[in-house]
Length: 305
Image (cartoon, rainbow, N blue to C red):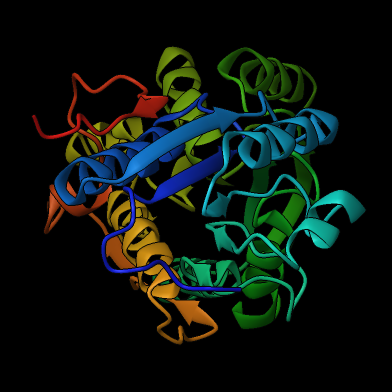
């Protein structure tokens, strides 16, 4: 695997996301795009449309190869990499982005350990809740993304007996699906004391709780624009930020460093920031995309004339 010569054409990076349905991945895209533009890198981005679309991501990986990408930044829809991607990595450098994949497969992983995200929530709950707190968990798609690692980190670090987990609801990361899950649950069960949820179900929970006049408390395992607004309004009491916009910038930097022949650590971790009212986000531009940002799928480099 050769590094880029000093006077080579602009590096060509290809990014694959599970989806762009929420502002988490939108913020990753924002950071990646701004860094590619700043450094004169060509960037092509694809999104699979959801964690259930592994075949789509495989096809998109092939499109990256056909385009002539120098490296792929992979937000994988699965922990175990498909054979086609594993085989292609012999000649095409792949860096994992946000979502963890099998060890010793990729050049490096950019992002926090989702186990640590779960641990962060557990430590907050240990300090702010008493037993037995009746709890509903809403982590999005089952066993996909970082959910299984986050759940394990939460379970491993909770005080024994503190939470009475009444149910765990799984479903695709869409507002409509998460609302359906919660509405159906509340129709046949008493309202829980606490909902611990990913960003999209946390946003849904805030609206449903307010509409019903419930006293249920909400914690979000990660950040989105809606979660940030709810934090400012004291509707969500704690959320993690893993600085996803910064992760996008870090991913571009890491790919370029590898192409120049530099050795990367196994993980490049931006760190977790714990957000809770009235504390505002320390560096908004490291976590969330600008409010008017829209997905950018192609960054091209205009040749000098």
